[in-house]
Length: 440
Image (cartoon, rainbow, N blue to C red; front, side):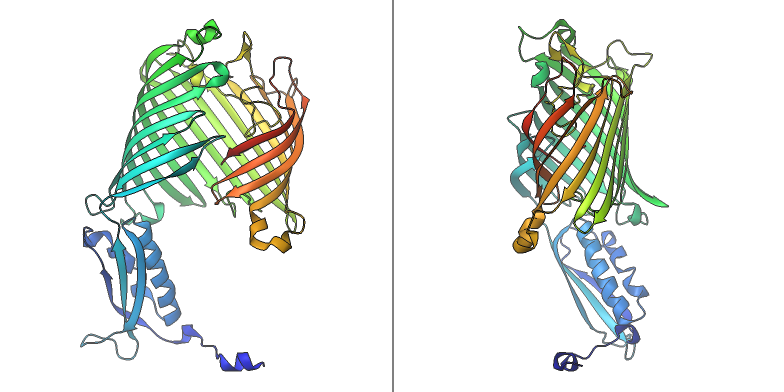
């Protein structure tokens, strides 16, 4: 036994009996007591000191999840007083500092192949039980601009804590540019959302939304836009239900080494107004470690939009645009789909898959943690629009470098070589830059 080991005796905390007599949550200013009561549930079940410490950290995490404190500290002391348990009684104090009444933030936000400036003003814990309201605006010089007023109410303090239920209501105005098709859309409306987790065998995240909005399409270039796009111009009323479900057991979101991601989004529009369609999109990802540092990744996405009995015209802004650094590399955005008079118009169906090989940088051990933000990338993508067969499919392969952005998104710089293409496709042969949070 070394001297350092001799100087540091180890104690088995499970053999130290412990009982929590009292739990106190301090720092509550605007928050009602019943909103934090469940933080103590696990503490009162602790039978030894190790369980006490674990449950204390769990209670601290729970208070953070409630969205009322910006910092929480834990203090464990011997229980005193007439009601104290002799020899093994403890008092736990959870000290929190509530968020200020008004918070503001400004920064950048990563979208799908775009970056934007985001500003937000939030009033947290509005009525004392986690209710919050925020005003958020984002500006992008390339595609989308948003303005959103959102109210949300979590129910983490109820007996459904593990399911993390939450409701929200948003009023929004969104402008989205489709430069490749020479039009832009402006949507003004509201969205009511209910989200919940279920753990019946697998952990799933569900979201059910109702959206009602006025959608207006305007041309960006009156001279070059074909008639097939012009006939979509003008305001229309859309009323729809949207359901999405996500299964994700990956060990990371940007550079995972193992795990599966499955995501499905389904919409039915036509509950009112003059826009009607049904659409479904499924995205999948499988990560398999090969040897230390080398990961094989397989991705795929399928999208279908169908007419309903109330459909008079499918909205062009909801069609699928295949191609670009986030879907089918080696092609420009929307460049691997149907065209009208030389202008891409989107497809009713599409599928796209990708096989990837991720590897660390050479001599990554020298640069240590800095090199962990980079990966070498080898890929082969293939897919098609308005056709689920492999006949006349598009494909490309290449290699490049990827950079992780704070576990939320990544940047890719790839050298792409298109292999199969159609005469009307718009290819990107050579270097292609992409930024986003969901790639194929």
